[in-house]
Image (cartoon, rainbow, N blue to C red; front, side, top):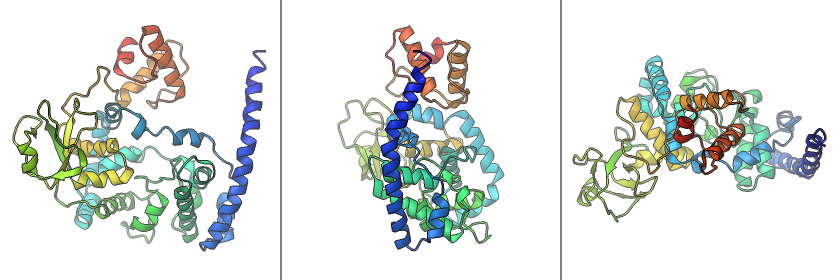
Length: 391
């Protein structure tokens, strides 16, 4: 029976996939008609979609986005670690000339542009990904939400191919359709990507100048205030019951009148109108955030993401990171620590795949087993308690 069980599971899974594949084929036929109505040629559509089958793994990823599922302290620990800061400073030096021209052209500081690059693709080290026509047709046809949004992104992808901006095989990225060094969505590419290296093409895959300048252009169009700060960390008086949220922007004087100070207790430094952000609630760190924070938020519509960009940009300027204590007794792990955690799990006989710092299903299952042995709640979360226990 044990030998037959995996084969049985495969059979059941295959039967379950058949209706989805039939629905997918019917949907693709409708997408083809829609593409032709938008001026996309039959040849472009058929070539891009040749052999494309639904990628059902994407449907799982769609419901597990780290910006919304991961505690903010874990999110920042991974994205704003010492390695990221060191690599970012190296990129600032390597591309200093290009970044100076970008600052001049768009009024967005180089540290923020490089921070976006680091968070989005680890400075181009995270390459490849899913073939966009396959990924986008999967979510447009079989996704549980926003199907019209993804259909528009697929149409934009096909227009990019038809115009000859990028070859179809170059269009690989996230399950949601973001691609290139700084992960532009196809519709965003069509409206905001720029040719900054002067070769006549807007290439966000192989041209770092194009990718970084396009990012600056995006931030500028999203309301970036040239020469202004995104904000800074503050200290909120005990028992504070005033307004919170990045949307409720007030003057610096108004916040000072409520007893709010810099994190070190000094008087507030003047900012454009700012909101009071408390991403982990009233017992965690707090920040005054301006429209520049909102511009970073527009890039990925998650406050934890915008905070990662903002804090990393500060670290690249030589400033400290978050100084307030997060409301947890189980700290988040850096990428290097996550890799070490996986190595420790492997040494104890767990199969977690390649120790690369990326936390997948195998690593989470191993962590749950360790947590059970330690008498901890079984979360599968790579935190400091499990890390220390495995020493």
